[in-house]
Length: 189
Image (cartoon, rainbow, N blue to C red):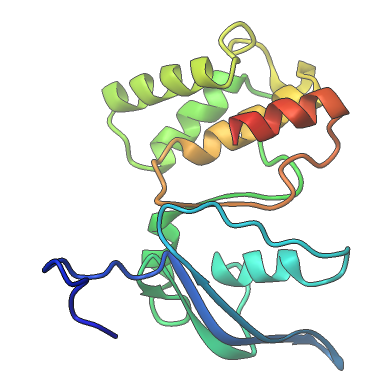
């Protein structure tokens, strides 16, 4: 790897790199030699049919499950030997909403601020900014179980951003949304 970019700057390492990732469940191989090199500051979409292994890749790269072979780094941290470093650098929004329906949208976001060790002041500021950005201010004080599917999805993504992650994994962020909500969600993303 070159030690400079020609103008004296060091090249940035990729946000995500993987070489030869493999995963099997019993005798069924779901990933067989996946290589990725995703530069920082980019939007990368992993496309494929159902069952192609997209969610498995997200789970491996976010340290939710281990790979059976290969190696990968996320935000400069080895997923196998430095999982805490990976987790500190990422935000993950799964296929299905992970917000608590029994509490309000704002309470969900404050909980995430606390889990990310934000001060009360910083947490309050970040929550207010994200509620505004995701058009959830009016609904913020209502229980999430009263939200529409699109509102829950927006809240889910907003809570992912509370800690200011360097890398965000969105696993099928528009699942279950009507066409208009889907369009709005892609505009937010």
